Image 1 (cartoon, rainbow, N blue to C red):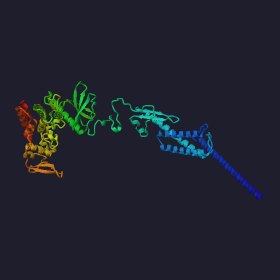
Image 2 (image 1 turned 90 degrees about the horizontal axis):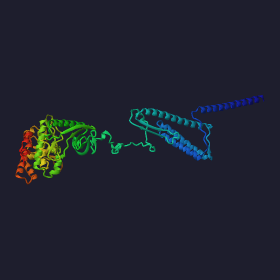
Image 3 (image 1 turned 90 degrees about the vertical axis):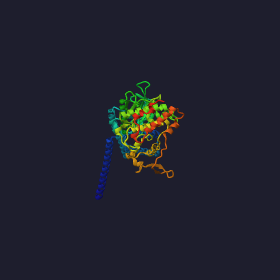
Image 4 (image 1 turned 60 degrees about the vertical axis):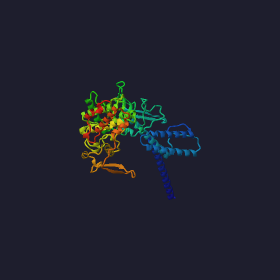
Length: 564
């Protein structure tokens, strides 16, 4: 009995000690949970009024929408916000399912923490994450405000609403080095619901602001086209509004030319040659400007019929030469007044003399024009004065180098094609071709290439002399070792190029016949003049430059001196 009594006492003491230990652990656990709750940074949930299930769901939905709106203005840690929103949506869906299972109409939110520790930990971690992110955003906004307020060219409008329904963040940031680092982190969007007009105002209604994709007209690289020509428009004001563009006259290899009104003088028009914007053309333009200034210095009384340079300036990277204006060029005169027969003999005499005077001035200063043709001859409104223009190809005589493509092809002298050193004679040849074209309104030599141009020369003047070919640099391209001409032509059947050797050349072109076809019903004096014109052209079109008519002899020729 005693033994069983002692055994029962040991069992009771063991159970009591066990229950005491259990109760003690429970008390310690409760104290830890209380301290954990009191140490949490999450503030206690506020006491709210009773809401119906529909109202509560609406509030939750509104809260989710606000959180999504607020997420668009987050500058850092977008992944964290996405995770929080995902957990929120999961909790909302889970609460919906729990609420459907319970049949109650009112929901109470208590100030005291819920006994469910797992639920408490989840909510406290979520609130801690939210507070931490909000605090980080506030600090970042504060830093941004301090940096942007120190910048002079920045306009920042930040409006924060506590409810986050009408939150707006708007930045207007101009180019500033202090804000370049901020631009990389801020992706701005224009608020289409803002009451402020955020679109740029066009101060000048006549100026059209183009889209950036269409190359804004305000950009420097939009002044030129792809080939470097200045894109002039009627009405443009250039050189500090001194000149107003009235019309576009034309475009050449080196530049385009416009007619402009000089606003400093009433009823004073000028022609402005705008050189292409590239290094080679700029050098050519400077060279032309130097030659024009030399012409002005050697012709102060304006007697030698070369166009005058009035002034020069730089406009948007283009060298601009201001020249005296003229009515139209000789090619336009021939189209308008020459019809199919060219101009009259009397006008032809006057124009020929003026051309020789221009050549005399160029030979005086040692310059070769190297591009004489109807397009580069200007005529005044009364059509009694012409002037030689476009000195873009001009150069000093001692600077010439053999090149087969100098001068426009129809007006190119034989020595250029053959590669023989040239001089003033190439201008005499081009002038003769121009005079013939003015007389007949037809081009004298119409070869499609240099090889066919030589064939046209020989059709008029016969075979090229052997002594001339011995000095030729490009002889092998057109003649064989026997000095027989090698004509390059296409085969009519195969359409392949073939070479035809021509050892004998037959003269088949007659200047006298061509001139008579254009000048009909002439008086005896006019027929004499026509013969004089034919003689002048023959002497100017000698194949050997050394035998060609000089400028001085040309001015003494009877076609110019003797009046009708």
